[in-house]
Amino acid sequence: MTAPLPPAPGALPRPAAILWDWDNTLVDGWAAIAAGLNAAFRAFGLPGWSLEEVRARVRRSLRESFPEIFGPDWERAREIFYAEVRARHLAVLRPMPGAEAALRAAALLAPQGVVSNKQGPLLRAEAAHLGWADRFRALVGAGDAAADKPDPAPLRMALAACGVAPGSAPVWYVGDTALDMQAARAAGCAAVLLGAAEHDGGIGNAAPDAAFADGHALAAHLLCLAKSAPHRHC
Image (cartoon, rainbow, N blue to C red):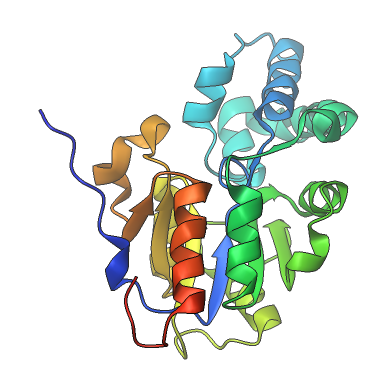
């Protein structure tokens, strides 16, 4: 069966702000996440996950997923996880292909923010490590808002920092999973998929408003918008 074609980006409104997911959208930090999870699994006598399983299964924030996995002792598992992640996450962190170019192009168009289900202090430490912190008006991580993605609360927090009232102007939320697309729609943002969501049921499952193969393709589209007249489609 032929896979569905991604929606064309030309119908996307010109953004007044651009919000980004973090892991697997702008950066690859999966090695540290996998190490943290497997340290917690070992402590609880649970089978470990391969890196591919981690990529496929990790979507929701820790405060939502850990009580289901580890039961009433989930807070002990949380401490084990974070100790392992903090010990290695900066050393293994890498930008995703085209991420740097996409951020530079986006800066020509609109204020930017990040909304992630990674713990807020870890997110901000990673942005600072890459020298990217000053690119964003907001770096909102898990625990910073009243609820985490896919709830719209963290996106609304980031929008406030960007000076955009929800629903007052077009906003893009760029992510790599169906959960990201759900969060975008809940907050009234255009749902923009980066990649093909191979680990999340594919493009058809994510149901984005538009999709780009990678950061390079997104950067090219953003540059076209930045150089074109306000009402021209790229």
